[in-house]
Image (cartoon, rainbow over the protein chains, first blue to last red):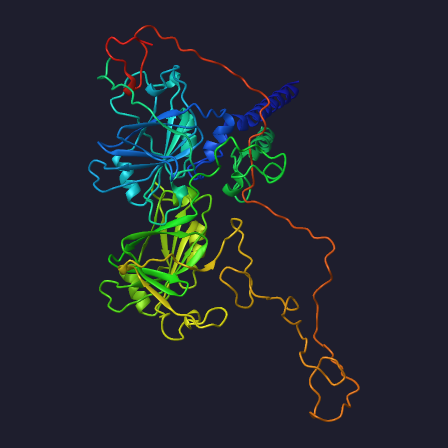
Length: 240
Length: 388
């Protein structure tokens, strides 16, 4: 009787432990399952925008304002096509661009960078949904820093993803600095990191290539819609 | 009790052991692997065009913006160096002064002419510049960046010492990048161990974009270069042209060879054979094809009308009644293949998320009391403005 009891205990423990391990083993892959991110910073420009066009209905008449900010003063030129007239404005400059398209910019007359001209591109992959009639008041801010300009001038490619943080997880306090930036290593997927933290809106790519005498007209874009907008009212000093 | 631990260990190995990440050629558990970038650009077979029933793309932007059909090269050092290149009937000299830039069409090899190198009087180099086609992994970089090319003092010393210098400029794979921001790296053959192919080494580390090969051969000596003999492809005399960029005479470079034209990663149909135009397939390289005679076929006639050697002695009466040629070569080339099996394998393989079959949608509505609304920094409402 005692032996049977021990046997029963041994058997019960083994069955219990086995059941636990089987349950644990079945749950392991489900818990460790991660979202799949086929796009990353090495994806050719335009692919993300095209895929966004499949997800979000293309509305050619609805353009998204984008505001380009430079370190200090400067000039921003928006290109749509090599043969179309570009939009030229002083920084911070704002223009409305279309979802899914890529645009070539020129930033020049940058404060503390005499004679430097850079030609970054911006690719719009999502749009904001501001109140009707106030679209110009809610542009996507794109800030180009001195560090990024230095990196581009040294021959490197800076890929920057601007994302919109979810309202429920946003910092409830006003920040003392603009657009906090997180730098990830090249082994990580910058689009994935942005998607984990919010909704990717725009991709900025900044390098050192400049147009030369035999430049291909495609360098300046493929004729995507481009429209000037008014700058939003100047922000007041921070409150609260 | 020992049976208890034995049984427990066995069950643990059975249940958990299969979830230990495995190395080697298999895909790690819980890790998705996408197909190569070149395959990701197209919707796929039976979906992509041309043909009816393909995906409607007219209302969507193109898949690749700013397609980099040219690679912008920036000649950095030595400063004040003059860079020219081969044109159709000679050389266009001094087209660029270092530091300077130029856009070279991809998928071609160019012959450069480098002269007026500071501190090296009389040195003229004729390196070749091989510009690789853009790869999906380098497309973003090439459409935003120029590629720096510098001939260092060590490179010039090696060249003048009758050494052959190969400089390979490549974009390292993310796993091989040391810095946080993507940038190019250069491999120089003179810094590698003997026998190590710099192009293969660069290809192992990333994607090759430009290869510069330089030696001290003078290509403008009489007879030094077959292309500089003054004869065109038809054998006619032509006039050698020299343009000087210092006098405003410019001309685009002429490729001396082309490669990679067509599909990505598929080499051009260049196989061994006779000479041909640059970038064109070899001229009738296969025996029996075109004007190339079949292998072993004599080209003279015999007195009895069969191909073979001429009759000896010449001028005598025809007495040959038999002419036999026996091929005694041992031949073992196998039988024709009736069923061919080709196994292909991507390493690592693909693993994509399975189709969604259950969606849970939950909305969370934040409630704000008056005065609790936060605004982005630039959108703080003015004093007295209505609160949203």
